[in-house]
Length: 313
Ligand code: ASP
Image 1 (spheres, rainbow, N blue to C red):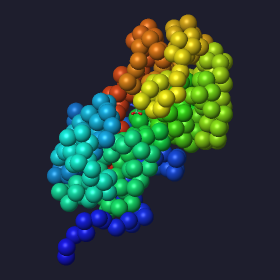
Image 2 (tube, protein in one colour):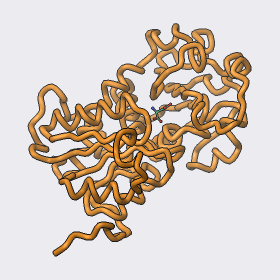
Image 3 (tube, rainbow, N blue to C red):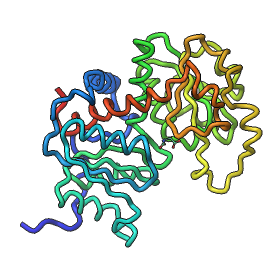
Image 4 (spheres, helix red, strand yellow):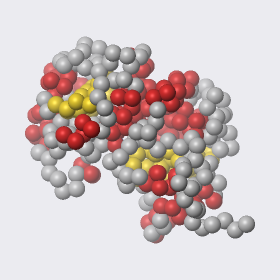
């Protein structure tokens, strides 16, 4: 039978897809975290031997792209990287046609990053293979939230009794959105902190148990986890922020960090902009777990890929 050029919408993403945290149940999140704890990139069985993992990236990436690729390779998979620049996307090919093409060349799973919210969901509804969202516009970045949760668990042993504070450009951040969903689902209350352009009042409705404050000193008091965000200049769309004001009021400095619990950890999804959202003293200081987050990205993404391809044992 001739294969359709344009695959039909199934309306249901294939089993194993990871499109966002919002609709995940806490037990599935905890299950994935448990699986990630068993993954070792240096000593792993080739669970995904001969599986083809396509990485389809329409936006810049360093950590997410390299760790998905290394995760896939650690499990014995074959990987193929497709960047929008240099591909037929530049010639005007649609997202769905690109998806269909990648399926036809043999992709078993597609990991996609796209500047438009919902792009991974759209492609997932037209394909019979799992799709993994590696960041869609200002919407979600589920694998980042999961690797951050894994990092918290490794440092704090359990989510019980913890409090988290997210400081910065929440509005434009898919990382913040996914983190809010995940942390509140596993019972961690979250305080959001930033100026109204970055933390609008409506942000508190994102998930139950979110609180907003404009004062970083208040936000930090007694917190266990400080998650900092980059100012997403590429998504500001003409909106001007006064960098000096932001730095004066919200930059994470060693003095401000002292207000948090003594054993609080400092997280940041990267890329970090030293001198803007944090000082180098904080980035490189003893409470920073920023490089652990990067490291944990590999086992976390191994777990996500293994689950996507039905090899999560
Ligand atoms: N790397 C993260 C993302 O892709 C955070 C950032 O870019 O600031 O969303």
